[in-house]
Length: 109
Length: 418
Image 1 (cartoon, rainbow over the protein chains, first blue to last red):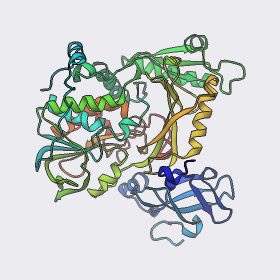
Image 2: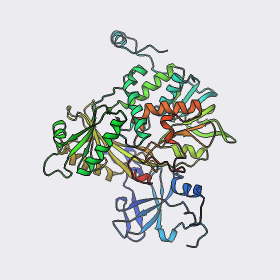
Image 3: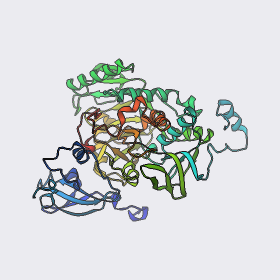
Image 4: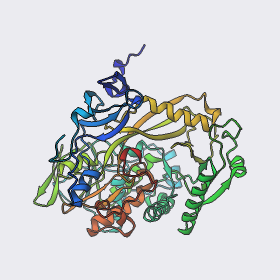
């Protein structure tokens, strides 16, 4: 019998499993991906279109550690922030997004 | 110039004992070139070929991290078509289709273009309206398109599920006869051989680690095989565009996502066309070897792993069986994933960058393969003239800032939903 390790499988072959702080570890299919969680939203008073352009359209898109939003749509429906290595899909720490939200620059949480 | 391939040379080699000569050289990198193109995929090689053949620039290196065609060129589902809606896309992809039609002659290499026709299916009256509009736009641009009613689809594709039990009843489709498939590996080999015979150095196993930057100007690259100075440097590494751009200090409107593709065990000729499901993103054709080649939507979250997630296999298989129930017991031979540059509007970049002498071709989402010849054509023009080609002017990096998004699918600003 061929084992997974014998044919050189890595964590990227396995189903991505996400630790929901409320429901526990679940398949990623229970979640909805919500994009990059590292970008601070510009303050509401920002009138410079370039600042908004960069916020909306540009991505660091790193090959490595990435902090991103997921919503547990088929579970508790909470938004999470997950750390994941995009080169291996290795999931790291996750926490509720409301504990970690990137607020408007210069505005209180 | 290498000996030309012909029926006669085939015959001569069939009886000769000498093996075929190598189709392109294995050069060591020179310290300096007029143009260095990063990425030995279809786009990079085509760009090198058109630069050498049509712009008189022959001192070119194509540097490739692994072997040529080892990225997305060898991972796509080999489809070519030009059924787009928005001005800019429509003309660009039709130009690409026309280049495909002459490519085997141009390169003296059979890329095995098979214009078997593509049918996009509609599963409801509103979808028929959308296809009718798309067909009209295509015909207004001189592209062949034919709207099929249910009876015509049944006649053309009798093996689809036309029964009352069909999950998504088929009520018609849009047919582009000139669409079809191309043998994707042959595109790398054909362009590499043709470019090499014009003096282009195709340098494999040479990874770029950083750019040589002097003020606001890029003057070459540092590679695993040493520094290569360049008058002009071009990025054609879709999947890793952000990664390369970051080395030059640029952030791009791109996220990298995985797209999986599948091939079944080979069967006898069965599926004569390229078929696109209308109820989900799903497309299928049959290769010359007999395998059914098909694919679906991206996995849905950004990743550079080149290994797809299993639930997508199920979704795609469900689409396949919903459309063609008779293939439900076919086994998959292989499935794999490629890294897509996904952009917020689903359209690519062929353009200058904020750095002088650095040019970008990337952000190809799903459409890189079919675009290959036109990319080469337009990107070569951009590099040679330091200006965008009229056909690809819409694919500039600043189009979001100017409010000129080109969202052919009308999805909105979500890279992972395009």
